[in-house]
Each structure stands twice: as structure tokens, then as C-alpha cells.
Length: 404
Image (cartoon, rainbow, N blue to C red; front, side, top):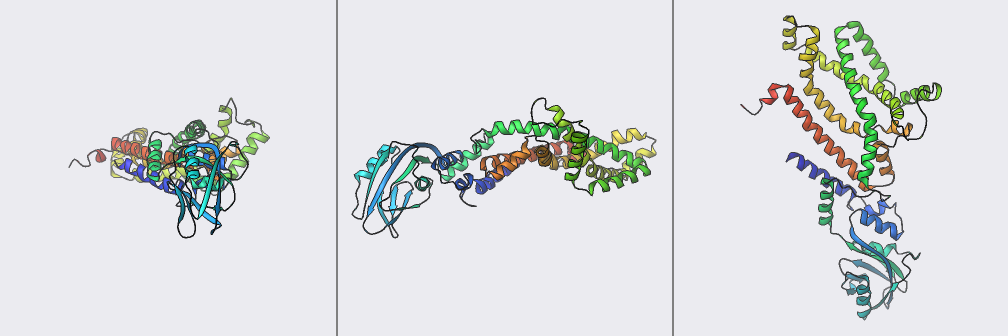
């Protein structure tokens, strides 16, 4: 229930930030403020503002005696407003023909509106203003001018919220700004990022633990590894990426330099090694602090006093007691590791999730950003649950909590 409450909260924040006018018009943002009616309607349907659309155009002409500018709205009736009140209003039927007939059959003493169907549905006449009227916005039109629009069926805010939440729970993230299924894109690019992240993570974890154990058992090794960690961590990761890429790809030609294509395993080897080299030093310092803390505790001193071998102490006593804090550490970092390294994916031309995030931000792709953020939240909750179970399995004190 707690996880479900968090998921609902995450979806509410995403809905307000990406799918509501709270921080600007999401449709205009999605289309980069385009005036093209096809882009506007397509973005509105992709974001769930409308359930269906009809790109058959219609036009209408306004002839008034007092006001030159009018406000057009479709909430839910077709209305014309001047500066003070509604001057023309008809029910907006569901079909385009019925709407045109309703407009032509209703007159007004102050303004006359005539409407007709336009056969050329791809007319170049600007019609974005009227299209916006179908998206619960009032727009300004002028007397004696012809406007074109596509008819759509709006979706209420509450229904959009419910539909969006239902889609997230079923992992149906809709389409991206290029009208491609987001689920397929995330699946393909996620596997590529995992191809680098998963082996890198296990190599970093095992290597850092062995280095920390070795450093604890030898003061000389401890000094060398500590100084090395400080030295290597003092330089930016980007420097190592460029230097190692130049050395192994350009100078030695030990790694391939080509676009992403089969076979892909050779393309992953150098990024994995670079990730391990950059990430192993901070993990080593963390492991070292955990080991030093545990080795000073009473049960470890008692084990050494009983003559238990050093190897048995390391693997049978120390490692299980590190499972709790290490699992929590992994739970905090693994979801972000799954997203991949943006620098490595960009430099080595690997289309993973890291690049997808940047593309989504640059293209104002709300659906993609919503999907990735939701997956991060799900991954975080899942890893927290796994970390809690691991800690309880190895620590009897946590298993006995709540039983007293």
C-alpha cells in the first residue's frame, strides 16, 4: 500500500508537470510552438487531450455590426463572445456536418455566422487558432475572415488523469514525438544500457570488495590504494573517457570505431572497462569504511580470538554483516545505473537510455520523460524492497523486529 501511494504521488507530480497547463501549454511545448494544425492535433491526441480527431476541414465567416474581434470557444458549445457577453451559441454535435448545419440554421441579431465544409483537408490556410478552441482554449477571430479547423473529441482532465495512470500501471506509455511506441524504444535502448551497466556494476562491486579486504590486511597496500583512489578521483571522468578512447581506439586500434551495429559485444568491452575504472575507486573507499567499522565490532574480535581463519572471517562473518548496508547502497544507485552513462553512450555512439533522456528534453517529449521518470520510481521502489529482504535475511535482529 505504501508503494502504491508513492506511485500515485509520482504520477500526480508527472501529470501536473508534463500533462497539465500548470507550467505552460503542454501541446504548444510538445510541438515547439508550431502553428501547424496537423502537429497540434497529433500532439493533443498523443498527450490524451482528445480521444479522436477528424482532419476534414470546415470554415466559417463572421459578419458583425459592432465588434470586429470575437472569442471562439468549444466548452462544450460552439460560442462567440464579444467583450461583454455571448453573442452566438449553438450546441456542438458530434459530427462535423451536424455542427455546420447547426451554425447555419441559427441566426443572431448582432452577428451572422455562416459555415461550410472544405473539401481540401490539407489546405495550407492557417487554422491553428480554431484548432486550439477544441482544446478548451478561447481564441480570437476577426470579422469577415475565413478560418479552417479539424474537429476533435476532447477528454476531461479527470479522465485524462485516470487514463494516464491506468496506462502507466500497464506499462503502456503511448507514442513519442515521432509517433513510435515508447515501450518498444525503452525495451531496446534499456537492453543496450544494461549491456554496459550490469557487467560494470558486478565488476565494480566484486573488485572494490576484494581491494578493500586486501587493503585492510596490509598497511602498505592500504596506503597505496588510498592514495591511488584520491589521485584518480581528483580528475574528471570525462578526461579518462577521452584519454582511454584515444589510446585504445585511435592509437592501438584494440577496440572498434564504427556506428552501432552487429556484432555489438566488441562495442561494449571498452565502455565497460572505462566504467569499471572510473567507478571502482569511490566504491573501494566506501567498502573500506564499511569493513573497518565491522572489523572493530565485538563479534569480529571474538571470532579472531577463537582462532577462526582469516578467510572464513572474511566470507562467513564479514560479508553477511555487510549485506544490509551494501544492499541499501545498491538500492540507491542501481536504478540510476540502469539508465546508462550519457557520456559513454554519446562518445561511443551507443543508443541507450541516457541518450533517450537528452533527446526527450530537447524535443519536449512529455510522454518519454513521463515514462522514464516512472520507471526510475518503480526501479527505486523495487530495489528498496529487495534490499530490505536481503538485510532481514542476513540480519536476525531485523527479522525479529515487531515480534516482541
